[in-house]
Length: 419
Image (cartoon, rainbow, N blue to C red):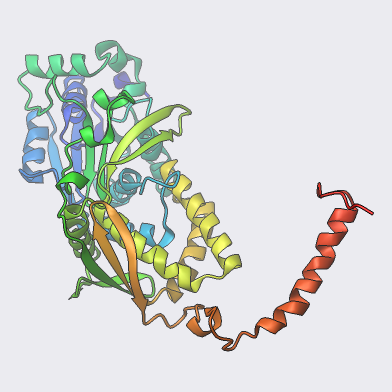
């Protein structure tokens, strides 16, 4: 699809209010496209001016309408579900931006259908992961909707080679952009966390703490005293943090963000990751609430899952982390994996206390876990209890049969016996 095919058409554009949004909106409008901008309220901590300012900015750039879609609670719920699945990409990244894309798309698509809009558009480039999310998720949820990506249109590419050309374009037309030529890196934000990338961060000689955190402080600036924080879970959901009962998922994440952030928990996490398009990229992430609650949940599951259940759960967690990242979070494979996560969450009731200190999260205690498999009596090394040490004699004799057989079969390089 190219811009010449869109003249006179109504196109829904996902607008963040940044440089790409301003440029693309004005450029499409100048080609006779009726641009309706949709901006999701995802609880972005960096939007200090308020999203109404974003809407006005987009109308100043040529949008015939600018709609703010309230999705803060939905964003919080996505975070809780991600914690239940421990769905981190490549073991480090809490998928905060991918989750924001899913919530945005699910929240905005009904507005398109109500207005009879058949085309949506986005400002994601052809090098990153967001292009897949903005394409595949709508294709799965509402296949009747077509997707127009300016960064895959030769006409747009001929006009804009990159950031500098976009700034030139906006400045010549007095468009209300916030971007400057001196911005050291780019940031994407929502309630769950921040993603920092590009610019000076593309150099691996730039440390993660070059980033000035928004959701907390660097470890060196965190308090010199530890803090104990107790989190209560009921069937996989955090219902109380630091003594405060909470029900709205967005409120839960905001509370956790504040506590974790002040102790530098989940601040400036670093990952050189594998993008879906097949190239390496480098990101610096903030996710204090996700890291805080996720750590407590992980400690809770240690008491509940046996070795076989744990293996299945961790496969599902790793699988979902990659699925979310690569835009397949709505397909059958992801739905099947979430059934594993949901089964485990039904058993995840308990109270976990954490010790926070300058970016570290340590286990400080756990109690009231009705489905725990841990028995202090059985685990004791100092008394017999319900586990009789003598019973291990037969157990080890049986295991020894296989060990000797493997050795006699030459499958194990052993020590030669002497006569």
